[in-house]
Image (tube, rainbow, N blue to C red; front, side, top):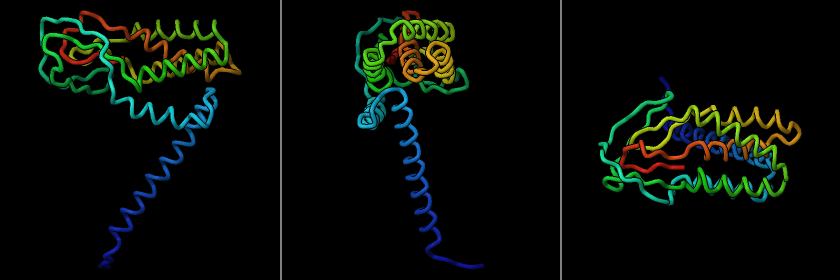
Length: 198
């Protein structure tokens, strides 16, 4: 048996370098994707960073009174396990706007709409994605609204290709982000204490 005291250190270093490599590749791929959508390379990193950091920030909009308070538990829907948190406000469901998942996509969509001026194509795309997502959306008591994860982006990509083949990326982005947000409207039937996030 060969004993090499630095093997573990080299293994850790290799794993760190591999992680850095993957991040760099992913960032370049994401920057390329944003460039194709219509967001300049100068702003692509800022949009990605703000989306990532903003995904942890919720802006409360209003609350809906509920009669039943759920205790924290795990719930599986669409093959994903959701953890229902402790009540943030007793006897009410707080409806909040997530900065990274809703506010930034709305702002990017407005920018793309104004820049590309593909108004009717984007509106038709938003309507199609919203109809599909609305039919698949399910209320998760204590958490909000759940949708199968891959359906909105796949429908948005298909809609983008059908409506504007040469300018499919911006149409797909706006259709997917705005269609999903419009379709996931909160419902008073959701008797839960936690936040419903857009």
